[in-house]
Each structure stands twice: as structure tokens, then as C-alpha cells.
Length: 186
Image (cartoon, rainbow, N blue to C red; front, top):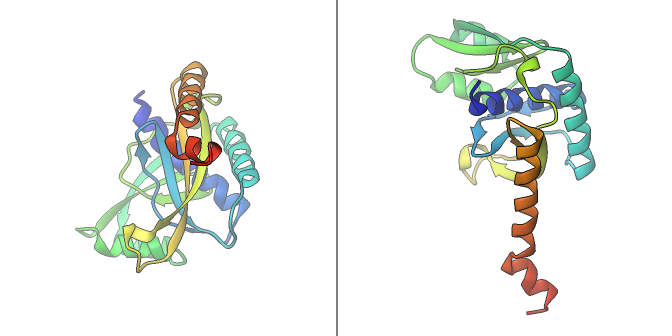
């Protein structure tokens, strides 16, 4: 199993967790990236580090349920009905070429997506991922568009790899000249 596929699937699991915890959320996109994944959300409230912990806990609950990822190819008209209350998804559907689009279902969460994904959440190493930060991100990188909440996570094949990565990050932060400058009042 490719780690990129696991990371992409984790972005969907994170979105499913956010949907359960914050039902009025509007969803942007959620790709795999180097060392992890992210998802952009238009949330009804701002998030704190405590919320990250809550979302991560919900993700682990969902992973333990052995949720299957099911791919479907449907018409754009059908997709527009499914995502009728998701303005960002509707925008993406409108821009996709052709008359059909791919979606992935995982229990109650459905996302516009071409994949690939894992078969089920039992393929995710439950102790080898962590949500790391919250940031702002303009929809589609355009400052004239709405500011969304981007949640980042990191994921690896083993807990050992995750811990080594987190330790390297912590060491790098200690040597960050911006932080050192503030501490030394430079």
C-alpha cells in the first residue's frame, strides 16, 4: 500500500470526522501532500488546538469501524444533487470536463474525488498519524475568495517513523532563527 494513498484516505477520514463534529461545515479540497495531508473547511466557528485533539480522536473512532471506501462514477447532474448544499464542490463539478465525475463514499461521508483510496480503514496504521496545525487558506489560492480553515496532518507507515519525524520537526523549531531572535530579543 502506497503511503500517498493512505494519506489521501486520511484526508477523507478527517473530513468525515469534521462533518460529524461540525455538521454545518462546507468542504473544499483535501489532497495528500509531502509527509501528510490537509483538508480545507468553511467552518461555522474557529478552531483551537483542543479541537484538533477532538477531531483526531473522532478520526481514530472512525478508523476502528473498518469503513470501506467505495468509488462510483456518476453524472454531473447526480453529483450536483448530492452536493447541492456544498458550494465549493458545486464549483468544482461545474469546471470538470465531461459529463461524469468520480465520488468516493465512506459511510456517511461522500466526496468528489478521482482517488485512489485504500479499500478500508483497517489499512490505516492507527498510531502513525497526527493532526499538526490549523491555518487559513483562501479558496483556490485567491485572496478575493473566502478564507477557509486548513487542517494539516502528517502520516507515516509506522509509529516509529511518525515519532522520528515529529522529533526532527521539534529540533528544527528550536533552531528557527525567527523564534531564537524573539527569545534573544534581537
